[in-house]
Length: 419
Image (cartoon, rainbow, N blue to C red; front, side, top):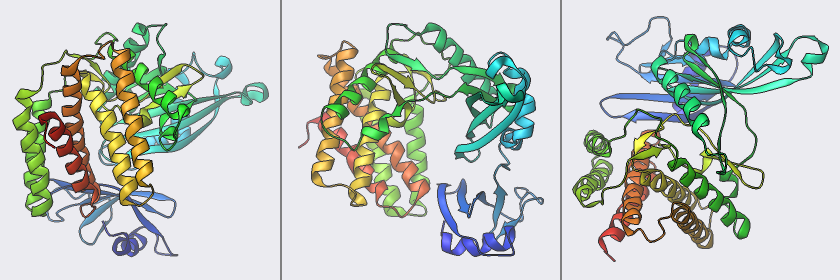
């Protein structure tokens, strides 16, 4: 995880001639399980897996550098075997020719295809922006912009594609909610192709104040409430008790390498387990599963496009609201730790969170539902523990982990009436 130490080793293995800058851009460290680090070396994205060189984990075709880090250069990913085909314009163009026959510009053959990486989660999925143009002078001036998501599991891609079609078919035309249209499922690539949609990300207003920021929050809250009224089209069920058990196990493993940090993570996980029976039972409905500001795209004066339905499933809708509020808390904590905000800025972010919560309760017709408020607070604490564990996995020495745990306890304190 030390870019200064790994930079020269990557340079030696990947580019013996010339200098190479190196940055760690992501990591997933689970003590006793695995460690994957994502590097950017100049203009190249490199996945590094910590391995036991003497075991069967080593792939003899991929370079290994000290301390037993096996390297895979994007788009090569041992867990995404079809990613090289998805990321290769010529190969992708040929495969999309039939899959998108009815949606190509001018409905003609593809002449050119451009591919750009948007987001990459090693071993999980990659999201790429694709632009295709037809052949001929007339068609070449018309481009179709698409988003292709490539998954590690073909069954996951199939489920996401099927749910996207059902969601679009069951949407309420009168609601402000919209989805990015799914244009094709490409089984041979374990991928789903979406139409690119334009708009303004909700993230862009989080630093603002006043009526504009509050109005954007209200629109997002109304759209989320509309999503929760959708028919439950997903077969995937999310069990919070199972997740809490994972929290406890992961905290215990962290304790083996970082006793103090693992201890505070374990304390919050244990408290969540203990308080779970006291949380009022909620209805089971359709949930987004990763509801955060970056998933909301504001379009026009009214419409809101909800993005990234990979984690869609069946659970208490309070989970989505809690996750959204936890993300706002996380952003505030990050800004405070990095001194990017003042006390006034943090207070403004907190006020926006209350605007969102109030607007959601109003749109859901539950303004006086105290049980729902309690469930939202509890699920916010769950989301903060999840984010704290992820913060440790990305940067074990960061103070963010403990700060998120403290905020999780604050949510539970509020539930218990502790001052």
